[in-house]
Amino acid sequence: MKVELVTLEVPFLHLENPAARESFMDMQRVRAAAYRADFGDRYMPFDTSDFVARHHLFYVQTESGREPVAAFKQVALATCDAHGLELPALGIFGGRSPEHVEALSELILQHRRSGRHLLYGGSWGMRFWARMGYVPLLHRGQPLPKVAYSEPGEELVLISLTEPSPWALECRERQRQVLEERRSFPPRAPSSTGAEGVKEPVSAPRVV
Image 1: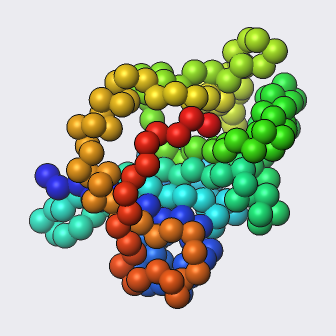
Image 2: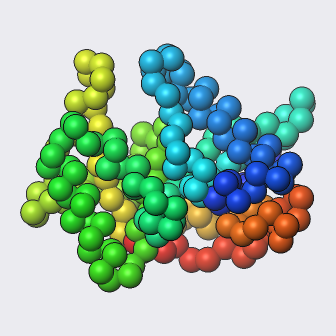
């Protein structure tokens, strides 16, 4: 089965691009279906940051044609700052856990001072995050606890990745062709990007 990866960056800059708009709608379809399966209609999995995020979509070829099957997003602190937006994680934990908000605020301040990149990743249903190298975010030397969400038994956990695990790097190598053939809509004015996007080389994993 052939897998295709499409990366759409800052959809707000691609509103006039039909192919980019289609990818943006595909992302919404996939995410809505995934969240509805777990939460029904009581949770709206979209926010303003979706318009400035970097979206990764995976497609497969089926008998009925090209179908989106998975998606997740990354939101850069620098992009949020440029557009006057708050990093999404702050809104998620705001009102639920002052401790988490304090930890996030300190992390954001550290990255602004150092100039290092900080990405928030979310809107994905992933149950094997520990295998990828993610660990609970530390605050004052201790892992932040889980936070109760809207329904009994639902919990939020704030995790951090500074270096991919050997397993994650092995997965990357096995799927290198998919990455190398990735179609990308980079964050630039629509007039400078072709209707079908561009293919760009993939950089090495970035430590953030």
